[in-house]
Structure formats: C-alpha cells, structure tokens
Length: 448
Image (cartoon, rainbow, N blue to C red; front, top):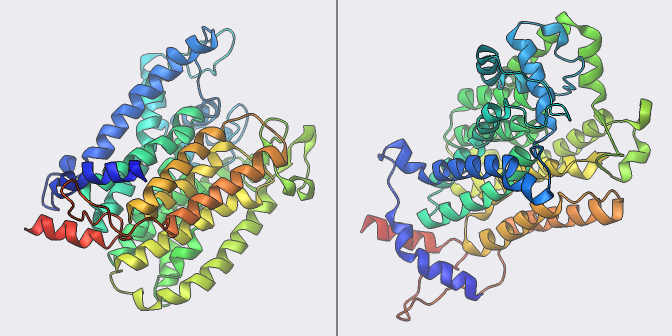
C-alpha cells in the first residue's frame, strides 16, 4: 500500500505532462523507444559479457532456439524453399517466422559471417552481434502496440511508463532468453489489428491479423474473439484476408517439399525430456525418440477458444461496425489474453516463453488503474523469471505456473480492494485509486 501511494504521488504531475496526438511519433512513443534500447543493451551485455562471466564460461549465453530459424532464413535468402522444413532448421511454424529474419541473414551473407549454430568449436558466433540486436528490436513491436492501445484508451502518461516497464520485463523471456522474435512480432501485429478494429477499420485489421498469423499462428487462439466483433456480412471477407498470407506462404513451401512441410506443420513435435510436460502429455501421440506431437492438443485449445468467444461475444454486438468505447476494447483484450493462455492449459509440453503472450495482453488491460497494473505487473514479472526454472514435474512446474498465470489474468480484470482514493502530500485527493475513474480528473487537468 505504501509503495502504491508513493507511486501515485510521484506520478501526479507527470501524468499530465504527456504529449498529445499531434505530437511527433518519437515523442508519443518515448517509453517504448527507451525500453527497446535498454532491452537491446541489457540483452547483448547479458549474453556476451556478464552472463557467461557469472557462470564461469567463455561461451556466450545465447538463445538456442534462434539458430534453426536463422538457418531457415538463410535458405529463404538463397530461394531454397525445399529446405525450409528440413534439418538443421527445425522449423515447425509458418514460413513468416523465417521471412522476418531474412534481412539479418542477408547482411551476414554479404559480410561473410557464418550462420553456423553455437558449438564447442564456435563458442562465440559473430552473427549474434548482428542477429541479437535485430531480433530483440523485432520483439519490441509489442511494446509499441501496447503503448498505442494505452494512448487510445487515454491512459495517463506515468501509468503508460509503468505499463512499458512491466511489458519489457516479461518480453525478456521470449526475446533474449529464448530467441523467438516471431512470437513477439505476431502478438504485436495482432494487438495493432485489435486497435484497428476498435477504430472501425476492419480491412486494415484483417491484413494485420494475416501478417500475425503467417509469422506465428499462435494468435489463431485469439482470432475467434476478434471475429465476434466483426459484422456478420463482413466476416467472410475479414477471414479471407486474414488467411491469405499464411495460405500463400504455406502453399509455396508445400509445393517445394510437401512431405517435410506437412510433417512439420501438422505434427508440431515437442520434447518432454527437455521442456515441461503437462498432464496432457499422456494423452498425446508419441513419436520417435520420446518426442510428443503437440498438434492435436492445439486443435482442442482452438475449439475451447471458439466456445469462449461465442459466450463472451454476445455483449459486443452493439460495437460491430462502429468505433468501440474503452470498456469494449478492454473486454476484447482480456478475452484475447484468456484465449492465448489456453495454449498453456492444453499443451502437452510447455516451454517458459509460451506463458508470455497472455501476460503481454493482460498487462494492457491492467493499465486501466494502478490497483490492477501494480499487482498484475508484479505477478507477471515473478512468473516470467520463476518459469525459467528447469523443473520438469507436472506438480512442481506446470501447476504453479498455471496458477500464477491465472492470477495475472484475474488481477488484470479485478482491482484489489485498496482504498478508493489516495491522499496527496497536502491532503488533497490524487484520484489514482478509484478503479480508473481518476483518469477523468487527470485528463481534465490536461485540458486545463
């Protein structure tokens, strides 16, 4: 409580100092820009300097998952589509994940830098000095999308700064630790798609959704939620545009090598001996060498997400074909976060960064008030770092992580029962703890 009050006092003047919509883009996105630079610097230093030094190693502490996608990008660069889903790429997502890394593969190729994976003979791969900053910067798309939505909702300036801080803390897992910029970029583009729908721009939203899907189809879990906000007569066109990029990319890959493409995309192999098995592992198809096929379980998650969207979407009928109010946008975002969380609930094998998409979206909802943002941000940050533990038991990893994820979603939607208002230094009310209603006073102060 004391910490929250101090934050409120500190932010009382700052909240009214934000630039308006007519301000230059760098001024309006100052917090995501600063956070991106900080994450790049910290990420590069932690992987090449103090991280290895603390572990007593000379090899850099790099994200293993990035190298396969980078190899796939190198094959795309040389138009070798038939090798997109063959070893050593290990690619099991749609081709867009490799497409976004083609620029760094092209620069490395022009400079004569090898894309070879880190090994005992290559402990400090020079390509990381190019790929690291690039993939972290790509991942930061989510920071800009979250801030754009917060600005659209009229979130006070200082609370937007706190939102960015919470977002960048959780983004570390998917970008620096695991090297999956495709997940972060897909979620960021999907958030922009939701914002476009909130502004009644369905065509733009559909193409942004399509771009997100072709990069990482995990956003398909939240697509039913978005579909429920589209007018029925516009829905076929919306879905056609959203499906077009993925259909074209996948058709090209399948035409070049049908067997490899079909096997990778449909089976979705995962490794329970390396990652974290869940109770669903016993019910999932088992492949060779102890590998589990995650594809069937993901279909179940999508079906459950569809059911949730149908139930929740009834309240959004009035918003179809019009600009949304703030309450509708927050409600859609929360259900999108819930749908993304279903991946972890039904996945037979979970990796720590699977938790991130739901956290990223839920934190935007939590930014409605300090009584939501502070507890949700704390729990999300704790979950991000605790989930990196190497425990493999269902009860010692999956159950606690799911509990923390559920708690984050709950805190994002329901404020803690703290006092309705906090007193300023001179006894005056600051209006920060009234479940978002204090925003009206803050915006009134801006106008004055």
